[in-house]
Length: 267
Image (cartoon, rainbow, N blue to C red; front, side, top):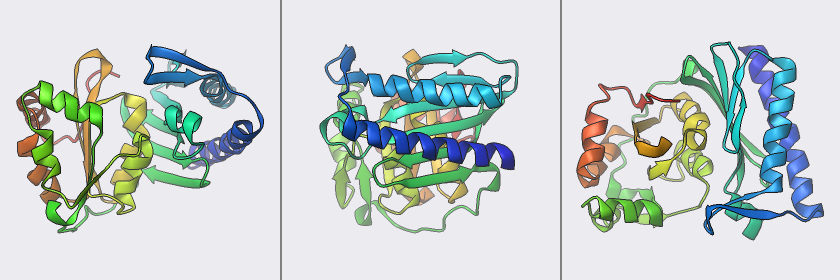
């Protein structure tokens, strides 16, 4: 694992350096995918192609899945899951608060993750196998910050839950628009809880390994259309305070996990 981790760190950092310069020096082209709020740029495609090319040169037997499409189906038990630019809207509008996210899975479970805050040159790294003791944090919702976005609040409402009642339990509510950085913020004690009803695997796989290496937790439920409900938290107490406010179907799916907080059945 050490060789793979060293390779991955250098690869992501090198890619981040180049992307940061591309953002400043070149014009990028924006295309809508499913609508005006779901976009991709030619820089997203460049990052994914760059990472895939380097990985396959080193590990041709590995599989790779990226946000912008399957890169390679290998015969190995190892699989890379890549989000080339997490927070593409932030990348386009502000030039900050975006990340490169790369996870290494073994037989379907994240074992290692990297999330690079490109503009801050801050690399989050986590080895799930080296997970530390779960946090003994006793922070309550009344003392904590909740990260939740408009689309999740809309989904909660459509499913008969009250997202405003959940939000009112917390000292404050924030939303950054970059799932991987918001998730890593849990490990950095910038937030107590992160809730999202419509993530894809590449949005959270790397952060899963990072959070578990820091003693934090993540509850995941597979939904339709390749989406996942994700709740990341610093302490079980915070999670227990949130669960009653989740939609009934989400609670049912989480109860079926049998204690496995990474309950992904279809990669």
